[in-house]
Image 1 (cartoon, rainbow, N blue to C red):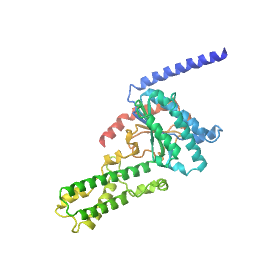
Image 2: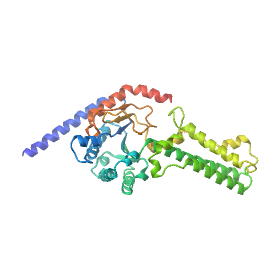
Image 3: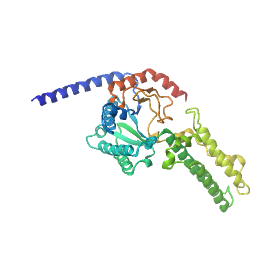
Image 4: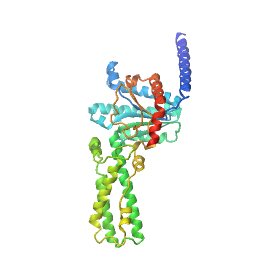
Length: 366
């Protein structure tokens, strides 16, 4: 009898809480609602230590906090959520801790795919963002399976950044852009040959071979597993951009153009005939634009975040979404990630609404 009364009371207060939350969200929706919120889930280990829990228990509590926040954001009408779950730099932790986290990740991915999970109840699509080749095979396979299983869900999108750093993402985007541009040049060169602009098939093959070697050698030389752990340094040689980001495109384009000039100087003596200098420049110089870089970003599947929330009171980005957060307010509640709750989210949204006009104006100026 007492148990039944307790259950009834829990249902009543649970229903009341849900009603009040929806009322709050209805009031919030009178102003602009963020389309994309990103979270740096900081403080799981400190929470476990604070609560006297065993190692790994803090991350399990953090998963429950994520599910709670996911529900709140769904009810509020937020379309995209991104969470920083595991950095490439985290591979430098003790091997047993890394293995524990991989096992926990495998377990939680399985839970997300269960029929009664929040993901299936709310129609949430999952993306695992990052250099997934660095993950253990079981985790990588599970992540790919989860993405395929939720591919038709359209209501909300959850992006889970694992084996991720912003430097690695930028280097990856530059490499892929160079590959794409090289393919364009090869296709254009082939069409020139077929139209009789270049004489000598044998010489043409030599040019093509030289071009492939030089561009591929200069633009593809970085990311093995060990090199990915040091992409901070790898990135320094390739960066500097257009006005929007301030760091990337100009040096990438200049680097490729220098390489093509070098190739031209080696191959132009008697190999290519009948082409004006202006036309040579037009098809020999690849132009990498901002849109090419952004198209190849891991995060290209989602718009830039409107809010970035980092728990535990820290104000650092820690190599997370550096490219995407140029005009994004940072909220830093002092609560550890497992302690995050409804009021932290509401406060972040209110701050977003207060500064929304300013950031929208900044975005339109780019």
